[in-house]
Length: 220
Picture 1 (cartoon, rainbow, N blue to C red):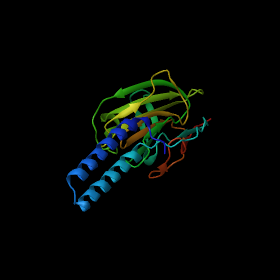
Picture 2 (cartoon, rainbow, N blue to C red; picture 1 turned 120 degrees about the vertical axis):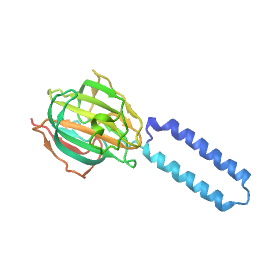
Picture 3 (tube, rainbow, N blue to C red; picture 1 turned 90 degrees about the horizontal axis):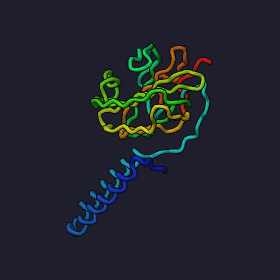
Picture 4 (cartoon, rainbow, N blue to C red; picture 1 turned 135 degrees about the horizontal axis):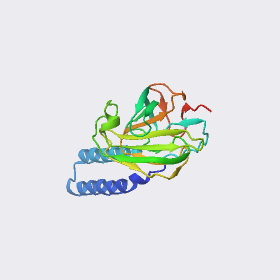
């Protein structure tokens, strides 16, 4: 299993601390095997849970400009027409994907192109499905201009558990469809705003896989 760079230091020090706790307890609580075994089991379970948060499976790059690919693993929670007020200033179809703590947390570009706009917004930590989370929570906004001129807006939104958004792009950078552009720790939401004439290919409650699931088809 590949481990994402965002989790390597945390997992290393967590392993050191858990091993240290168990060694100290074994040295000081001799004869209390049941308690020691419970602590050891709990340490292993906790470590494995955190480990799976940072898994980073390899995903083949799709490279198909006619389709918009899911930017994250998770579940589709919103499909609706919405006014995009921050940059595009026009009505779009919004597709929102909720990432639970058990999902892969890597965020992937839904299309190939150039980052025309990027901004980080500090904010609150409302639950990711809260209606106000899109404009009140900590978030980033990225606009990708494809070679054919079509623009897609992608928004990372932190949730009640996720307290840290990471991003690896800036304005002017090229992005590749399916390529990694960010990471959100421990659960969150990603919104994609596609043109109104795009055909939505997913439904609410459908599971998605980042860089694999086609969520919309663009009009040629």
